[in-house]
Length: 274
Length: 274
Image (cartoon, rainbow over all chains, first blue to last red; front, side):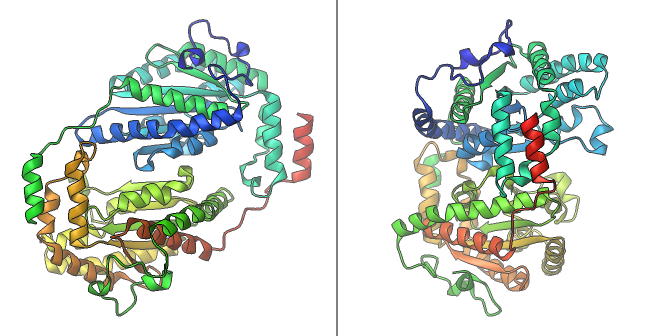
């Protein structure tokens, strides 16, 4: 599945069908079963990542989630990341920057939220907003956006060099599916708080956002910090796909349980005598 | 159950049997079923707390977990807190203070980790270490410990006044149960990383720790920031008890879904036209 979702050199967002389920034959029921079956594997890998940090390792993982409003970023956090031990998760949702944040480089607030050793960091939105909404809404001039693609790549290279694997995922939904999901937020009293009238304004810029995503992915998908584009009209598929991407990322790290830093037999005797 | 676990004016830690299950008639199987049945209620309350903050409320909840090594603090985080949406959880495990932290008042690092609006904060260990291990190991003079009880109470009053409910839980295990649990950490390669030879040293001060807990609870259990002492030799009971304490705390807050801050009918029309 990972290979099919990778945004390689000739990637075209327009060529990705948001309702497709690349690399998975079954439907919703099979997808949910597969997600549930994969939870233990992911959990155990995350536990090893965390354990290694206790033995001095500096490695970590950062999952970057991007996507239009209602593309299911929160659902991924809840139903995929939520199945591992939250003690090893460092989650941050980036809202519009505060005044203090705006006084610094756009990467300043990002650096502050990078995962510590052994942690699985999760960014719900990220530094990519600064080349997405900024481009679409003209919040920064084109020359500045241009520079940011390079700044992002250099920044992410540094993050990787420091021992943190970076997994970048775009949840790709269709404009119609977004309409359905926003409509549900207007139908239920317990969903009103998730609704923002500004989301409708953004729908007017749908095509421009697609182009901004295409440009951002083209310019920043590298072998070390690749983008994966996950068709997300079917929530069950998007969740399964991100679970598999995370699992594969952790498997690549060849994690293992740390050796004892003490003499096990001596400690057994001390404990027995205590 | 809450009333039975409350450390009131005449509280005596020595009088609490760590194997008891106050307020619950069933055994392990019924306890697990009850925990599972209570997850949705707690989840829904947490979601309302989070939603209210999006509508401008400043209220939050702070769960403080204390207990001897292997008393099950991590298990509470994983199996009780872990069932709610991690996007609304702010978890922090306090280790021995760093050099920078030691240059400040003992409450300095605590203030930095207080939960933001709408969040369920969880402290795995806390400012209480500064009147527990400090008292037992003589890391601070008795006069300083004495002052800290007062400083803690004033600090917690401020936290409550700012809109954060404080739920303080001591997980109370027996020395024998701790031995069993530490022994498991020495029997399994995937548990070595949790083992710390210093834990055996602390077993030599068991009675002093009990006295330090008794003093801390006596001095800082107030109507607004009460302590609950949860018998924790049976993990299933401790988890169920903390779930019920959290649920009751959130129920007291009389949370509700925020009203729409926009005209729902107007937005439906805008969405339909978009």
